[in-house]
Length: 220
Ligand code: G6P
Ligand code: MG
Image (cartoon, rainbow, N blue to C red; front, side, top):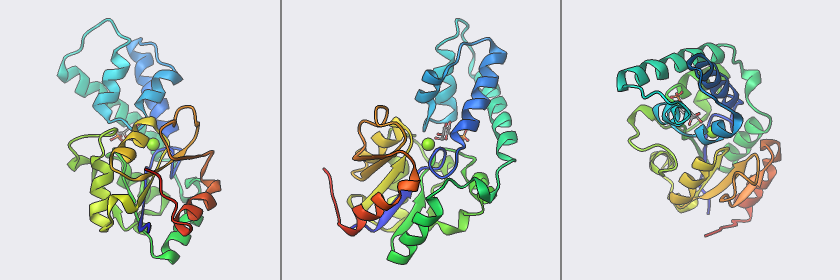
């Protein structure tokens, strides 16, 4: 029986994937590098430096590690400005309703985000204390699609991976959930989230996740 639900943050709990996109777009523009939504799709769920490397694939200049660190930091400064505007009203529809039902059912909850800004975002949204565990991204060695973030969450809520459901908006994140041996719920475009066990348009459809738990539907 399912005992845990592990949430991605950006693009699942709040629409902050949009801010990551805007911040990278601003940086790419300054560097004179072509950047579009298709490239951005590859950045979802991926760490800061890895994301920069993907953006720099479209550049004919090669950058030193020092320069890369500088630009990654610059993007982060833009991102931090964007998230200042977040309020509790920015929690996406369905998230609080789902959390409430999970709490009532005694299901543990965790956040598994690669973002080092996750604690700030969750605090701004006013929901940090609602989760049983928030993975510290700075202690993670391998980002998504590696399962480490999701497995770390499972260990810390004390639930077997096979009894966990992971929720993600990125292809890399869905792969991480599957590699962790969990039930994967995708939120977004089914064409992008092909490997998910179930795809919802958004979490307003949270009832389908409750059904998986109530009916103990498993997929291998
Ligand atoms: C999440 C987001 C990515 C972001 C990564 C690192 O996985 O989906 O877009 O690059 O976190 O975030 P950070 O805030 O630490 O730069
Ligand atoms: Mg995400």
